[in-house]
Image (tube, rainbow, N blue to C red; front, side, top):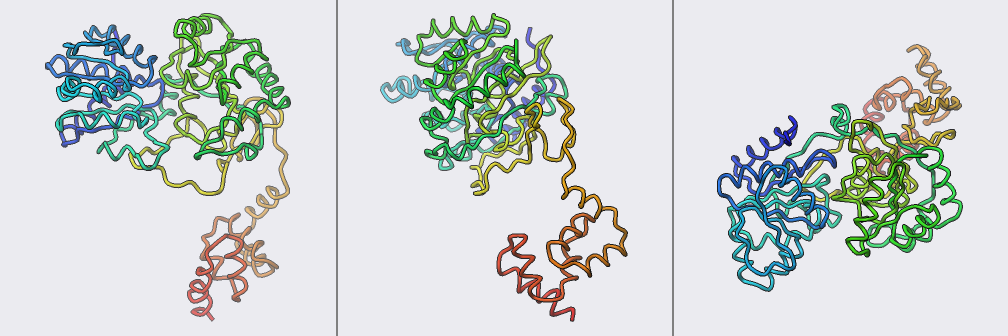
Length: 473
């Protein structure tokens, strides 16, 4: 018998509270592996007992099967609308692929009437814009719950805020790890120059990635790191294209799966992967969502992406826990961690479109351990995985020395400084506010030099001169 975890019940309560406040278009955000299907299944069960008609829409057959399996465990009678469905189903709980519903509604009036009868619509993976056309067929009072781990749409012209008025955020990944509901990650990677990969429509171009990741030296690094960090571990490798996945599988002599395979063949390969200890499988996006194999022990990003949802979904495939698995390995060959930060960091979610990114790229403060390849914070002095100790740089030595200076020594060093940069180093080391330094400037050139050092707008200079220099002769 499935029982709700405390945070799952809390999320249901929050959704009900938003409904009482007048919201009937609500997005539920909760991380991969947190049991989103279980959450909305309990809501459907409660709604169906009140004779409310429910429809669950998915965009992948795997998600549809996952939903149906959960309904069966909860003893919820349901009916599947497929491409072969001819008559209007009579069940109170319906499950369907979104493309099937869109085609039927566009061609048949009786299916439009069916949509008008829905009291509760659940949209799984609502961050995918393919669901939006369905909303036009719903009655105004229909409750719509969009479910996703990542309420972000890459297309800023179609934000979730166009169709939803409330966002209910779930627990953070870090909290679920702390409470033993998700596995703890270990990060490893290699430094590569992804600027060589061409861009297309805001994403790394597929063909260009194929060529980039077919490089013999990079592939040699993949084999070396698999041997070093994931030997004997059940491993899933995500590649930039089907052709790339096939090539990697051929060279590693491992399994490969793709969407072009017949369903029976795909299921056979995935079953082999799931039941074979230490198996390795390559794919391109086919297992990104809706695939549930808790005993995956290593995730390999043998690709680059600009999509945060894709990054989180890929790594989420390895995050589930089992009785014998509490950690998993992440191998990043596309500088994705530098682009997005660690998978497990806390993030603030919104229905609004993402703000335009800064032109500065790969700014997340991490570095690679030269001994084991771990991806760690730039501030780390000792690698937690292999014990490597980073040598103290001259800059760090000077910084530590400045921190030890007494106040009178700081004043003397400030007066003796030959450059604004030297004065700024003193200020930062002692933790003084910028105003302290500006009070020390004696001429216009120092303000200009400081503005250039910090990258300030030219208009900053005259304002500060008037405030600090002219008023303090």
